[in-house]
Length: 428
Image (tube, rainbow, N blue to C red):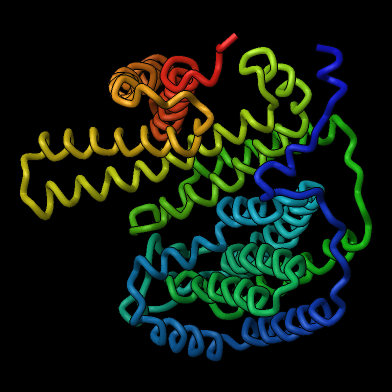
């Protein structure tokens, strides 16, 4: 094992998706434009905060201007500024440069202090506490206190500015900044913040983003080993919090799915960092168990997951076709879709994931694969049932138990497929 621990290939080169971190360059033009925007926004924010009639009139105008958007659309826009969701998205974007992730935490802490202190100091009333609610639209809970400045707006612009400063494509940069602006503006759309709040919060987010970026750009940062472990754990905690977090808009369509996607990105960043830290051990385990390199083994796992993802899409499509469109019995439609999808997964794994296997006895191989899919319900649902019935935490957060159950079933399928069906492992 000692020899294996000495060999440390870079998992960042796996699939060509992740590369060694690069040091971002200063972008004085964009940095200065953002700072100018922040200064103007801060000045306008305090001006509106001082003149209540202007603040209220502008609020009503903007709120009604976007009344054509559905509540679902406005809720989806406003969760862009939710702290947990924005953090997960930013972490997912910076997965190619784990060193930058430490700065995201620093930026989040600094922005949080600069926003939360005045928010509780002023304790300004929000629109639902001042105006007749028949005059404007409210989406979600009608918050009434701690209005100035807007935390969501600051978070939206903090994440957008950090990402935009790290991107070189002009159109993508403009698109990211546009999303940040919409995320901030959405606080007026959902009826819980004044324009003054949005402008002040946005300016704080931009100031912090540019300040942190200037400290980071051009300076390669080496993180000690213990710091890398700490960062990996923090990323994992952010991801878990994202999965469990209630944005306050979960009742609106698309919000939960969007939050889960963002949390998945953060989980991917955490797993990537853990993979870097544990790569020597992974290499040793892969050689002992699978008789192949860790890169090759992980590549197979990645392909197996891609096939499984495509199978999910096929399964849902076939089920909708048989049940909703053709009017089949629910159980019949569900069964046919499941077995056709299992056959789909078997074929793709045969020609893609395990293409180096001996595929002469196709019918036997196919039958074994279908049997494996049937048996995999045991580890999958067993894990889910066991966790939700014996652990109070998972009983309350059953979605996490479901994820762990899916992972258990997928690992079971992969091991059985590799050793017993396609037989690329255990040949010696």
